[in-house]
Image 1 (cartoon, rainbow, N blue to C red):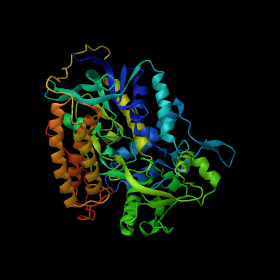
Image 2: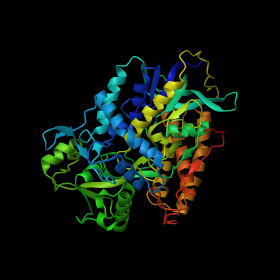
Image 3: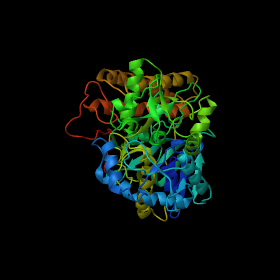
Image 4: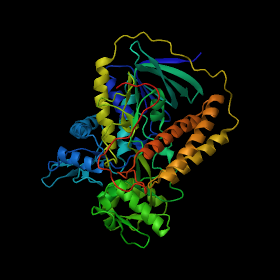
Length: 535
């Protein structure tokens, strides 16, 4: 018999969106937060740049909205963009009250104010940051608050496998729990909740080269799709232009704030190239910068380009970018004296599970917030430092909506148990590893920064073959972390490819040689599962 847990609210994911939602709801509900690995393993912890919000008197919400719309290349939902920008300052002030220590400076009139940096696509300085480790500051502060809150239970090393859904008396699909795999005991358990929230982050692990940690395997998107939720704009995968290129560096990202503070992109011979691609040069939006780097690398037949901030004073560099300075120094690179070798890497999933302004999905009782979602904020390309902001704004909005409908007393139903009576332990783990490698490699080669119809067709053919192999494997062997992640990421890969095949134009992050021009009308790509849905 499976072990069953019960709670008012189940939050699947432990980054900025999930933890801030948990803290908002803990006054009103018994909350369980599910973390696939240790609580600090997600993307939030590794975010360097900061959070965009209007704090400068010379800045405006209208300017933030305009910058976001321009970066989104005609596909943003303007109402959502304004909603996010208008709520930004209040959400940042909540984070500050929770204890996040953002960098400050003394102004000319002697008053202390927050130090605001500028990143690509922004016309003003509006990025609050904690040196170059903003995500770490936010994550550790929220975790401290979570661990001191007796209304919140943190389940570390638990994978969500699938959502448990049924059909109510009005033929509407509703979600009332999930199957979860306890990685500590290696047992599948069930959990009932009045409300379930997906806060699982993005799917950049689908690519061979990514700035994201290993947990970014698209779990929430795949689970929602299997349960009957629509997804949108999955073709828009943001590639961060500047990740450290070094055989021992892993996936170390070099924040856009470097370029905001004057860093220049150079070819191996030291010459600049961005002014030839865009009048905004190094401060152009990420899709333009990433394509320019990719183009120059392929044109010259070289492994990397270079990011150079060595012309700035050494003390300035060490003060503003201490993490990057210390990290690169370990690899023999002194950024105060020499340029940094860089390559683009998959960084952010702009599409995802469709939600409304309150975070509601197509399924009753199921919400989603953060990178797992499509809100309409990012359009065809995300503006720098709007990602953590989206997490905070929609966590607050979802909390307000959930509070209204939570029941004070609930009779906990017995959920259908997990059936593993016909499976055995795997003796072919090498198959999973091979499939992982193959998937990520052909996604990088065929569905990367520059695409063609032929490449997409080849990728779809390979994904369909992999899906049949993985489905057979899943039906015959007990679950494992690698198997669960592979099952999810191959599903997300299919959604990315099919979305890309539907877009017959080049817009924002989706660039195809077969359709290099923009269409007159910008339309969101929406994929619908075979299961019924209702908004």
